[in-house]
Image (cartoon, rainbow, N blue to C red; front, side, top):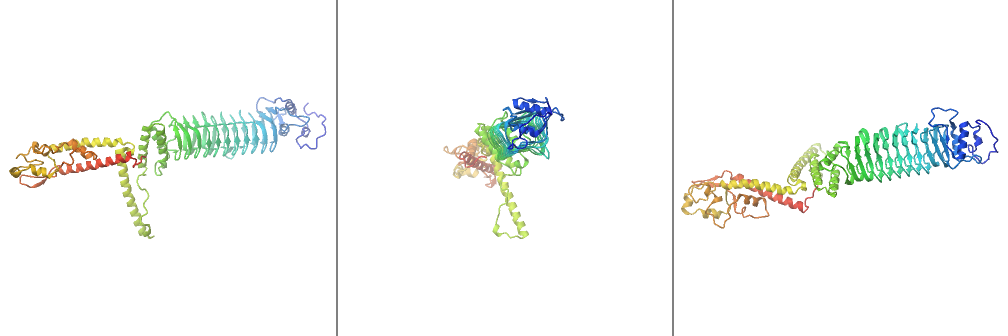
Length: 607
C-alpha cells in the first residue's frame, strides 16, 4: 500500500546515503510500482505519453531512479533488464556523475524537471526517447551501448557530450534541442562508434558543435533544421568513417562549417537548403572526402568554400552552385560524375568563383585541375576548350605581362620625393610597355595557335594566307608588277636597237615596241627556257612555306620602278605595296613555322 511502512533490517554501515531503499522513507504508489517492476525485469508504465504536470500517480523521485540504476540493495536487487520507466514526472536532479551504471536506463516519455548530469559516468545505455529534460550533460561519460534521444525528445538548455564515448548510435531523430546563449548541442571531441542521427524533423535552436568529434558510421542530417545566426553547425576537424548526409528536407540557416574534416564516404547535399546571406553557407576548407562530394537539387544562398579540399569524385548538377560565391582554389578531385560534361558548362562553373579569384587575384589552380581531370577521363576536346578559356580569363583579369614594376637601379635611387616620383614614373612606363608587348604576343599566340592547344589553326592560317596571296600575286603578274629577280635576264632580253627603241612600260620585257599584257615579264616569250616561269600560287607557297622551294621566290620579285620611253626611272604603281606584302608573308611563314615547331617539340608549354 502506498505510504505503508514495513519493517526493515538494520542499515549496513558501509552503504552510502541513497544506496539503501529505507533512506527514501515512505514511497509513493508510483515509486512502489517502479521498484516492483525493476526487481522483476518488467516495464513500469505510468502513462502512455509525457505528463504535462506532476501528479501523485506519476511522480517519481530522481534519487530513487539513481538508487535503482546502481543496482538497488540486497533486499531489492534490480533485474538485468535494468530500469524501464515510461510516462513519469521525475522530480529533482538525476545525479549520475562518476557513477558506474551497469544496467540499462530507459526513461521513455518522461518529464525530468531538473538536470540529468553524468559527468565521467560509465553507462551501459541511456534511452530518453519522447522525454523532456531541463538539462542533459554527460561530458566525458562512457556509454557502452547507444544514447537514444529520439521520438520528440526535448532538452531546454544546451546538451553537452564533450569528450563522451558512445559505443553505439547517438539517435536524435525527431528531437528538439532548444538551446540557450546561441548553443544547442556540444559534442566536441566525443567519439561515437555508430551513427549520429540528427534527422527526421530534428530541430536545433542554437549552434550544433561537433568540433574534433569522431564518428564510426554516418552523420545524418536529412530532414533536420539547424538555425543559428553566424555558425549553425560547427564540426571543425570532425572524422566520419561513413557519410555526411544532408538529404531531402535538410535546412541550415547559418554557416555549415566542417574545415579540416576527414570523411571516409560521401559528403552529400541532395534536395537540401543552406542559407547564410553574404557569409559562408558551406565551409569545407582543407576537408578530405574519401568518395564523392554530391551537390544536387540543392539551394544555396551564401559562399561555398572548398579551398584546399580533396575529393575522390565531384558529383554535381552545376545549377546548385551559387553564382559568384564559390571558392575553389586548391580543390583537388580525381573524376567528375555529372549529367552535364560540356566544356561550356564547366567554364561557367569556374567563372562562378568569388570575383577576386577570377579577377584581381586570379587563381589558375581550379582551371588547371579541371583541365587535368578532363584529360585523364578522356574528354580531350573539353579539356582543350577549358584550357583556352583559362588563357582568356587570365587576359581579362590582367594577368598577362609583368604586373609588378621592376626594381630598376635600386642602388642609385635616393629618398628625395622628386627622385621617387621619377623612379615611379620610369617603373610605370617600363611596366606599361612590357605589358603591352606581352599582351600583344599573348593575343597573337591565342589567335594563331589557340595558346598551343590548337596547333592545327596554324595550318588553317597558312592556307588562308596562301589563298589570298595567290590571288594577289597572280593578279600582280598579270598587271606587269612581277619581274625576274636576276638582272642579267633583263639585260640579255633587251638587245641592241630594240633596247634603244623599246617603249618599256611597267614590267615590259621589251621584245615589242608596244606594251601589252602579252609582253609583261610574267608572260615574256623571250625568257630562256631554263628560267622558271612565274606562277602566283607557287610564288605565294614559296613565301609562306620557308622549308620548301618551288623555284619562285629566288627568281621572281615585285618590280618597284620602271623606265619610260625617255629612259626616266619612275615608281611602278603597286610595286612597293607588292614588295611589302611579299615580305610580310615571308615573316608570317617563318613565324608560323617556328611556332608550330616550338609547340610540337614542347619548347612552348601549353596552359
